[in-house]
Length: 278
Figure 1 (spheres, helix red, strand yellow):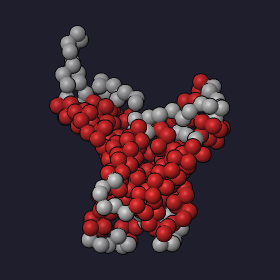
Figure 2 (cartoon, helix red, strand yellow):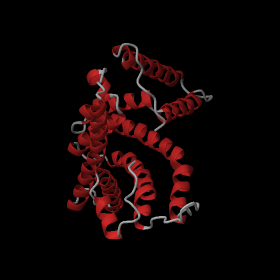
Figure 3 (cartoon, helix red, strand yellow):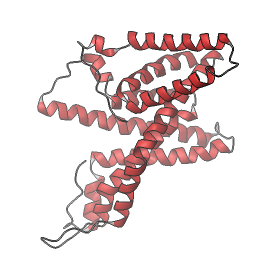
Figure 4 (cartoon, helix red, strand yellow):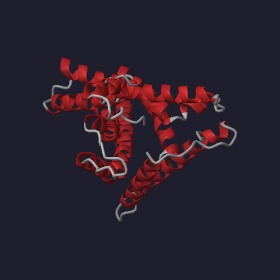
């Protein structure tokens, strides 16, 4: 993340310099996304989720999400171009970038029928992105720490509070995100069973997305493991019909076969997709 403008500049010049960066556009996109989700939530809880304002804020949320992830993808591409790095993985290598995955899904949700649950993972990510940027760039720009030469700079109390919030809740929030992404897949399965509009197409695309997330995210893996343990406990309870146990064993066996067939490392010369903690 780029440093804030020089503290020697006037406030207006510092704000102008900050606003002219691509990173500020990224921050603004995340902020707009959060505000749109909040506004859409009011429409949703009042059962007006198909009103004009609700549709507008829902679509604008994913436009903002596509903007933010598009900026990250562009900056990554530009950085690779500067050093002359080549993408040896081809199309699979490009799609293995989680920012590309979220960009593609944002565009898909933008064009798809409304699935309010799809907003929440983007919103949670945006909260932490906005918090981090505010702590690292906005606060030092508005209230620069002008400590005398040789003196230890005094920490800004608000920046410290934001930093503590991020450290305290980040891992737990990423677990919530992974749980929401799995719940969204279940929601799409139900839509497909009921043959709702474009549900089977969405289910196929989202399954590919979630499969990629499983390969890269330890949080998604842990959420699936917890889900498996809970269902194992329910199915293993006394009185559970044998048919239910057989069905669950079949689901687990099918899932493991699907995992093996869709292992991207087989198509990338044995190079596994890098795992991330998000």
